[in-house]
Image (cartoon, rainbow, N blue to C red):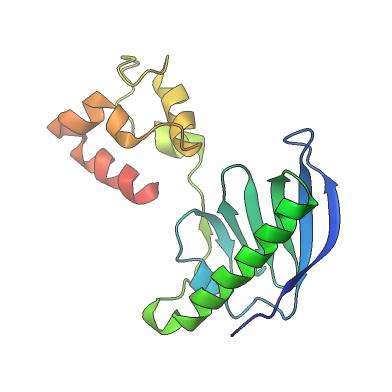
Length: 171
């Protein structure tokens, strides 16, 4: 077992979602050694080994891990915050227990930006995806509201195979 607990040390109002809170926790030991292994998991949107910080996307909100602090945004109430902290301890311990099967991430990693995604789309503004423009489709992809498969030209035209492959890896 890597981590015994994450203690709830503070809550703050969540500015992104009025009526919800941000939960701040303190892990029973520093997380620096486990962060490179957690960085290989799905939903990681940024990782910086130089600052020992890792951010996951969760629905709704985000989980950010620092070497000695944890922040969870858009939490309903303290009870949910405590549940999330407990679940996070279990996930960290499971990752640590399986670290020999994982290849740790040693380089910084960031989420793709809107223009990164848009530049790889067909830019036809055909609306077949249900969005008004390819830019709005790119934003919906980043927010996990749409899937690559929703873009008919990208998925069906051979001229976009490189872009399709790059986007699949990026997202």
